[in-house]
Length: 437
Image (cartoon, rainbow, N blue to C red; front, side, top):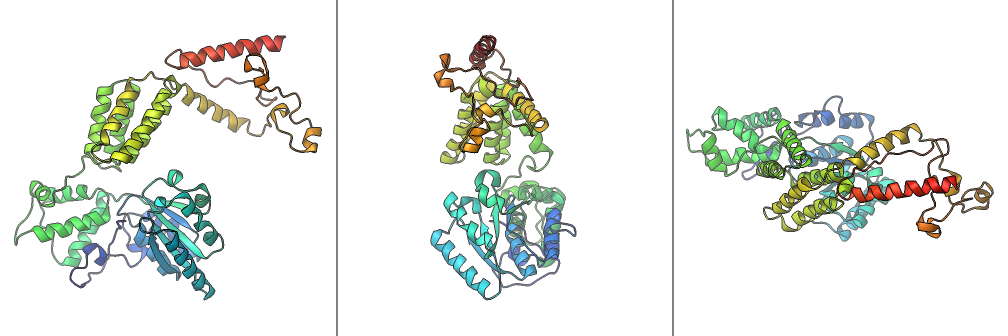
């Protein structure tokens, strides 16, 4: 995985050693762009001061310093540093690493185990970390570019703190380039506009910015200075149309979402195409389409969620650019589907009620009674099994007695929810008849 490297002091190194490696930070204070973690009051700085590290998950885009920070943590706490990649490691490799860590621990030294791309381990492999985390054999530091909530086991997450690494801002990339120039003892052969384009090309990735700088120095003839057009020709890389961490990113995803909500497939396709052209993360776009399906369409067309999820799977299978068409198809489907936010609104109302009445017990007649004491306390007494009732409907009240019946879900008379409305009205009629009878 790409890292962010930097250094305040110029350093001469053997030929062939990449610039990014030569600018590796020597302390947390030298890491650029992650002050919320590595600054004087940063989360990691506080952990080091406490003298004790717990297991952590570093979540963030490439080139933001995850690997480097893990190395520095081990150095500043006196832990042995061990690194593996989930891409190249299997169960046998993990066993060897764990055994080596146990031997170190017997000799009085703990191991910081850095696992790159940890989300690529399957569930069983992720579970194998739990015992060595719990008994202190290793301090696990996992790095991932994917959302840990979706990609990592709940058991693993419950034992680790998630720390978010941010994309580098333009000022951070500029600082890196200045340090690179100091180390090389020469300026980048770029005019002002070209330098701004280079910073945009890096797209928040520190290692990428230094790699691009090396390419430029190699390509430049003596005395040559590149303008923006020449720069793009030299590095054969287009600057993103917007910074994914800034306003352009949020403006375009907002426009896409509102176009879908407003049933305008043409506008939805336009904004989707712009985001792909800007180099947006396909996983992010897939997640947003799923969110649109559940927030703005819901049960008006239950297939909307199926289509959105299928588009993500199709992209995973086809890759780019072929898989982009699957997202386009999903966007058109969502834009042309009947709209309903009834489930979205109902869940918000139910959440508010849960916070207000969260201490109330469910009525005893719908609780199981697996013990004699619970039976004596009338758990389950009076429960009517709906499948044994006429129309497979008992009409019982399932809310806590002190709360009374509530209505959260109010489906509109559109799409599939028209049918749901009929069912709810029918059950309301039966419930009233049976309560009066």
